[in-house]
Image (tube, rainbow over all chains, first blue to last red; front, side, top):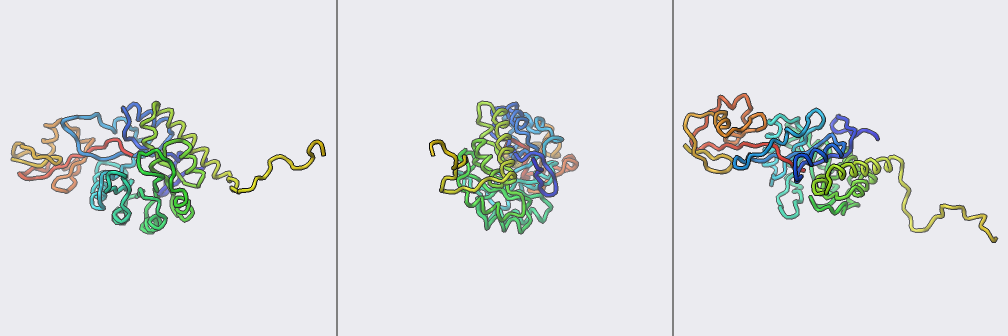
Length: 256
Length: 66
């Protein structure tokens, strides 16, 4: 498979994984390993001194994985920028998955605040990967301000519904000058394969792995889905049409 | 004196640095990032930054997320 290149950095894997919602750190590590990922997302939260937790970073080999902190929990641009700066101060590389989700029910990203934050963070030297609704015009605006990718959702976070906005994702891919990462809602390897067949450059998966009976095995299944989809895209898929077209010759039938 | 620590009021002793405060809570500063009155305090500066009455302190760490 060809390499994925984001902001000049090459990755062998086109599958990014999230680290949230796993039943244990062992399950999370199994999913990371099974996925073959090189990019893993993490979140920033207040330390809870009443319930001390084992440090997440003890379980993530920073030689092997690029840590991609997200700005989840941010309700506006100001909060997102604040979280991004904290992540960088914590010692992360300046890569940030920008997400601004003021609505807690559907967790849909706020386009205006996301664009505002992206502009500030790009100026501050961050490599910005913005999570967006599948809005081709917004995707263009973000690329114009210098984001390293665009990350349209397939369906709302954690819904496992797959790609419910195919046409808009197709337009984003067609017009993109940066990698397109389909993020959120991918619930099955076939969903990931579908995104890759459409020409997406990568996908990000979390919930589908975390809630699987066997997260490591599910991650391996997603890895195959992503690879199959990418290889099919590169190989060139046949066009869809309404009229049947025989695969077998239409001449030389018996009895004629 | 009183500070606001991670969103909650907390009574703490006077003349204490952020580093000493974190040590008392047995927090490993290598895994944390600290914001003091909305300014990020780098690890090197934790031991030289005193806490004052009414300060706001946010102590953040990485957790699983998508």
